[in-house]
Amino acid sequence: MHTETGMSGSIITFKGITPKIHPSVFICEGVKIIGDVEIGEDCSIWYNTVVRGDVNYIRIGKGTNIQDLSMLHVTKKYYPLTIGDNVVVGHSVTLHGATIHNNCLIGIGALVLDGSIIHSSSIVAAGAVIIEGFIVPERTLVAGVPAKVIRRLTDEDIERINTISRNYKDYVQEYRLYSNLNYKNV
View 1 (cartoon, rainbow, N blue to C red):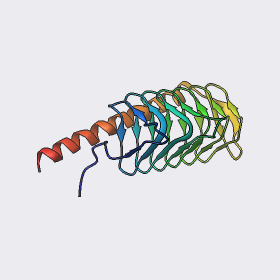
View 2 (cartoon, helix red, strand yellow):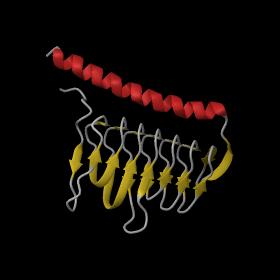
View 3 (cartoon, helix red, strand yellow):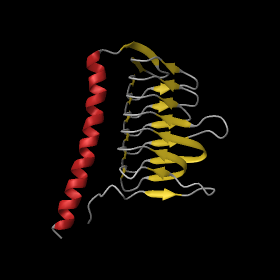
């Protein structure tokens, strides 16, 4: 038995390129981060997520959380993956060769495909499929298969994104505190 320290994932060099990860990043057991990947300050990457920058690059801004079982990948020569600051990526999300701007929420099980752009302060609903090249306007909710614009976001919707982002930063602190307490009590 052991506790999660946030330093449990696998960081894998590919073709001589090792991921660049800020020391504050929390990486859970089972996570694989491969190749040309950069992850900014205060991010968290949760259990069994794959961040695969093998044939193009992946950039993740500050304060973003990538939740359990998510898959982040790219398309050779054409589509890197760029994720902004304070983005919430829900459980089992697939992000492939897309651009996600700051302060977005990508709901559980969503698929965001090559060349799509999610502009700032937007929500992609759980289970939505963002098809190749689709552009989500700023402060917009999209949902469906394929996703369509549903409505403009309210200030309450934006606060919901901010709350989830803060919650994940708090979870990291709880894990770190518990890990330290447990270590000291052994």
